[in-house]
Length: 381
Image (cartoon, rainbow, N blue to C red; front, side, top):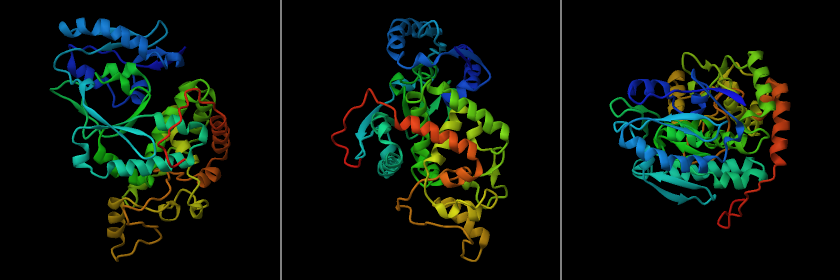
C-alpha cells in the first residue's frame, strides 16, 4: 500500500472544506493531509457508485457528511452534502465527436464564447495522435474531454474558481468535490477561454498531450501512477537541481524569464512534463542552444500576448533572434512551455532522464490494449 497525503472534509465548516480542497486530485494527493490507497483503485468506480446510491440520499436529506470507502485498501472520503455547497454533478454537457475520434462533452455556453475551441481541440489531438505510439491511440480516442465555460466548487458563499486543465484519475476525488464520477479517467478543461490562451505556449497540442500522458501513466505503465521507474528517476532529477530554475516561454521578455520547472512538483507531473518534451522531436535548430538564452533556445513563439510583449521590448518593430509565427490559425508541431522545450534539448541537458524515458516509452509502445476498440469514423490514423 502506498501512503498519500490527503484530506478530511467537515461539511459543517464550509471554509475549512474549501481551504483543504486543492484545484485537482494531483494537488490533492500531494497536499498536507493524510490518506492512503493502492494503485488497484482503478476500476472501483462501480463499487463506489453502488455504495454512493445507498448512502448519499440519506446524507443529503439531513445535510451531514457520508464516508465512502471503495474497499478496505481504498481511500476513505468524507463527501460534503450541505445544501449550500456547489453541486457540479448535475452540469449539462452535450457530446461532440471530433473528426480525430475523441468525444468532447461540451458544457453550456462554451461554443457561444469560444466558437473555435472544437476546431483547435481537434488540431491539438491530431498532433497528439501523430506523436503517440499506435499502442495508445485507441486509449487516447476513448478518453473523454469535459469542456466548461467556467467552473467553481466548494461553498456557494465562497467558491473556489479554477481555470486550468486536469486529468481525473479516481471517482473518489469527484465525489469529494460533488462532481460527476463519470469523469473518472478523463480530462477536464475548466475554462475553455483559458485553454485557448494557454495552449499557445505549447504551440498547440503540448498542453493536451501533457494531460493524456497522465492517463497513459495510470493505465499503461506497470504499477500505474506508482510506477517504480518513474518514481526513482523523479527523485534523481529533483536531487540534481537541474530543474530548480529553468526558462519558461510564457515569461519571455518579462523581468524574470525563469521559474522552477513544473515537472518537479511531484512524480506524476514529472512523467507528464518530461514525456511532453520527449515526444517533441521537432525544432532541431534549437537543440544545442542551451537553457540560458530565451531568444536562442525557444521554438517559434505563437502566443499573441508574448509576441506583443517581445515587440514592445525591442521597440523597433523587430523581434531580435526570436522565431515568431503570427498566424493564429497555422498548425505547427508542439513543444513544452518549460525548458527543455524539445526532445533534442532534453537529450543534451539531462542524458540520464532522457535514457530512462526512452525505456519508459519503449514499454508503452509494447503495451497491449485489452480494451481496444476500432474507431470506424477516425480518418487520421
